[in-house]
Image 1 (cartoon, helix red, strand yellow):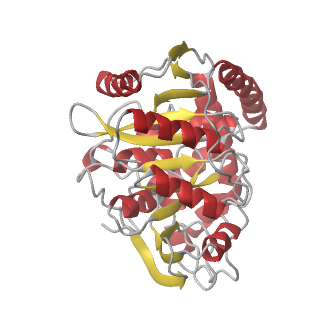
Image 2 (tube, one colour; image 1 turned 135 degrees about the vertical axis):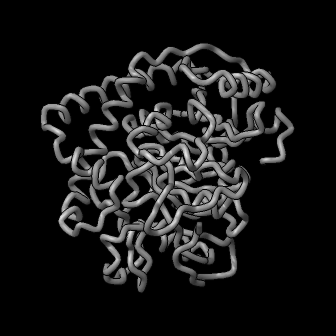
Length: 373
């Protein structure tokens, strides 16, 4: 098992960084951990976000392994290797940005970059016990990132502390400003069906913060999850369907891609209608509450030997994928359940309120006297 697929030393002497292998680094091929791209030519120029990292004085130490073609949630990769989960051995590292989360959890770098199309930063962050942030859709420049065309995917950082996560955002987002002054904070607790251990851990954290809480119903959450699947299937087919002709795509991904190729225009049009309705639903809830809170995952991460069927485990993204569809910023905060296994507290804020979201997370952690600040 491995986390890093390409070692390098690029840039200055500031924060150390590792980068998911869907982001171009000049002189190195972008293979997305797929045998089908094993002969890819070296990238001719850096992705825009890589340029930002280097301009910020950071040092890039390597490229990280991922779930093949960024099209899976477990992080299991028979070709490129499956990243070991450093804090929870034997458990899946989560996908698709598995190596980026694991590298941070292992202390190999200060922060790392992943991409999140259907939870692919927040899921591995939860599994590996680190922070993972999906900024507002469109906030981070995606030039030089695979896939080139997307209505869901966001570049996002992983870090072991909230302060480092803020530093990472200041590096990769030229518009990222100082933390805003916080007025009265109200947290809307989204009603979801999660395993009792998970919900108990989330409720205990929120109750201990002594912040005002209110219950929120998002009736469109389930349909938004399904619509998000329709959109990612069509967009991944458009980007990667041609790779099936190589015969080199892993069996689990090949099966998903073949099915994705059957996504109809009618299904896509209906998904876009769901996107509009669910976005309005979340916006309305955020007019009443500063942030929304819910678990990152509905249950503990699976053991590796339980997670072989990629399609069977897609439900682990039930609480994250809807917010890719809507485009709202979303943060996964690491905690643990009674079993000593990882749980993620997910916070959602209004579009463009990325600084506010991280500031609220900071206030919550301060009230909990957390060492994660």
